Amino acid sequence: MTLLQPFARHARHAGSAGLAIAIAFAALLGGCGDEAPSTPPSGVTQPRFSAAMQALCRTQGLAEAGDVAEARRVFEDAAHGFLHELATRVSEDDRDATARLLIAKNRVEAALAAPPPDGGKSPGPLIGALIAATADAGESIGLSFPGCRPGGR
Image (cartoon, rainbow, N blue to C red; front, side, top):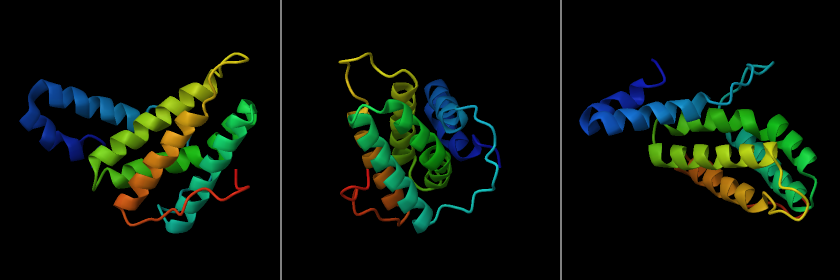
């Protein structure tokens, strides 16, 4: 099955606008251009979801403390790849949650790639929005997240 197949039937009914949305959505799903992970993913599971969520919490804490370089490293190393897997899995059941997740992820990627100059706006709120979108996406497939642990950032 190709990446666009789940969206193709909806695009046929929505005309060219629907097709454009389906293409944009597919681009968001695979748009980072990163190399394949060195270890194969083990699926979207509760333990992996919890670990990625805690990594997002830590990313937010680091960004809010002004350590954007370390926040970017934690995000890339411990959450980024899983977010793609989660988006793929959730797209089977809830396209709206998938879209919110991918949009929030892309905003965080951009904010961490080009941090604001001294005194600029922290990417912390964008990461908070990604945490919420990720929690909602997980919930849509039966995964739970109790929230960021104190000191877990």
